Length: 155
Ligand SMILES: CC(C)(COP(=O)(O)OP(=O)(O)OC[C@H]1O[C@@H](n2cnc3c(N)ncnc32)[C@H](O)[C@@H]1OP(=O)(O)O)[C@@H](O)C(=O)NCCC(=O)NCCS
Image (cartoon, rainbow, N blue to C red):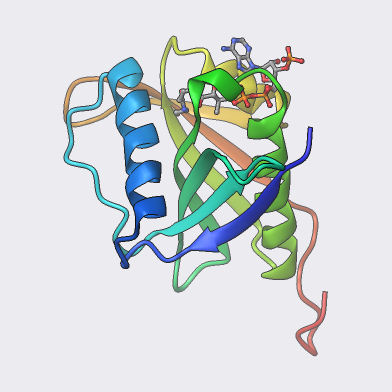
C-alpha cells in the first residue's frame, strides 16, 4: 500500500477539491451530519494511491494561540477502507505535528460509530462524552505528543 499525501488549499475550488467534497458527503450520510459542509479556514491533507486516485482526506484546524490541532474530519473513500490508508494519513498528520511542535490533537466522534475503534487503535485517549447542540452524544478523544520546543525554538 503506497500513498502520496499533500496539503490542498481549501479556499480554491478545483476538481480535486470537489472530489474531496463528494467523499465528505458520502461520510456525512453515514454519520448523519446535517450541517452544511465547508472546508474554509481549515487545513486539508489529502492522500492519493500510487495511480494518483484520491483515497481520502483529513481536515483539521490549527489553533493560533495554542500548539494544538482540532481534527474536524477524516474520511477514506469506502472502496479503500480497512487497507491502512486512514492510519497512514494520521501518521503523516502526527509527523506534521512534530514538525510544527504541536502537542495535542483533539476530536469528537459520535458515540457508537466504528471510527471510535480506529482512534483508540491510534493511541487516542477517551476523555469525555459530551452532548452537542443537535442533541447528539459525542466521544471526545485526545492524543498528546511528548515533544516540546527548546528555548531556542528547536525540537
Ligand atoms: C474511520 C476511517 C477513517 C478509518 O480509515 P481506514 O483506512 O479504513 O482505517 P485503517 O485501515 O487504517 O484501520 C486501522 C485500524 O482501525 C480499526 N478500524 C478501522 N475501521 C474500522 C471499522 N469499520 N470497524 C472496526 N475497526 C475499525 C481497526 O482496528 C483497523 O485495523 P485492522 O484493519 O488491522 O483491524 C474510515 O473507515 C472512514 O472514512 N469512515 C467513514 C467516515 C468516518 O467515520 N470518519 C470519522 C468521523 S469521526
